[in-house]
Image 1 (cartoon, rainbow, N blue to C red):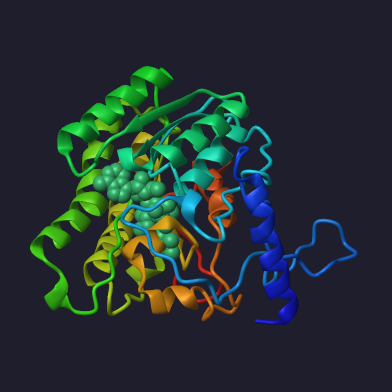
Image 2 (image 1 turned 135 degrees about the vertical axis):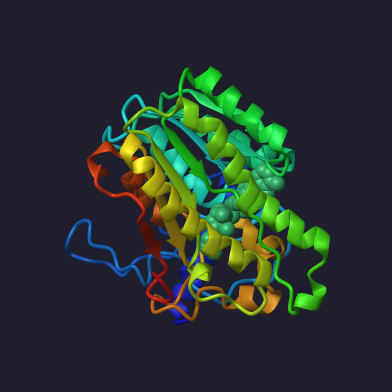
Length: 331
Ligand code: NAD
Ligand code: MG
């Protein structure tokens, strides 16, 4: 990492302390971009923080508000243009990471948004609710644990009732806990990962389907792990392969009904999941450093993909997996 990056990152982090009392959102481009004479042209290699990152660890599920540097979910940067005007979206894991980036973008594109998250994430969720409201849209907060089938049914029912309908379902919540050996993966661990990543979308999509009219969209968050699994993500990686698979199966099943089903496959993205057991401290220190961009992605960099897959003008895209991995991994 060159010295100018180091300095600009420190400056950005210092600046964040000042923001902590007020709505404490990261400023777009925590690392200064190389200046460019062409307006709108940004160098992706210098746009956001690069490793090395400071050691940090939070208990699962972690809070974006306690990460350093804070992830950028588009709080100050995402601009809408009415692409989802009047739509009604439910996003699991909408408090932080990709889910928050999608929630902010959807609201600014004109959609009302319900978010689900764990009760421990209330602080992150409150910020998202305020951002949705600030976009002039209805915000619905539905905390609860999606490892329970009954809660998943209640979640969809509440979202439908409070949004007065539903036409976008983003199954984005996920559990990832790194374990060096399969011998360290307990049955409880394995079960929790399967319930969160595989059973919950099954229960949520089943409950949502009767409400989804032609034109509706279902989006699942899969991963580069579906294609190139890490040795210490034995249980997690297989759930992401299953996600990519259910997207393609359901797309065939629901295509004739006019409901599109697509997936997003992120590479390494700077989110709470990684600092709360998803990655080892060693991996975290150089997180994203092995991509051609030389850095991890920020959640905001995937927001437009979630918008695109939900938008009506993408009407021929179904059964697709859209990747965003900084040049490494698949698809
Ligand atoms: P994140 O921690 O911000 O989001 C994950 C969310 O899942 C949490 O905010 C939490 O609300 C939710 N969640 C977890 N267990 C839950 C439960 N039992 N009940 C209700 N909600 C629960 O991290 P993220 O990286 O933005 O994760 C979003 C998705 O992206 C996940 O599916 C993850 O697997 C996937 N993904 C992440 C990366 C990455 O590098 N961060 C890479 C590829 C895929
Ligand atoms: Mg969270």
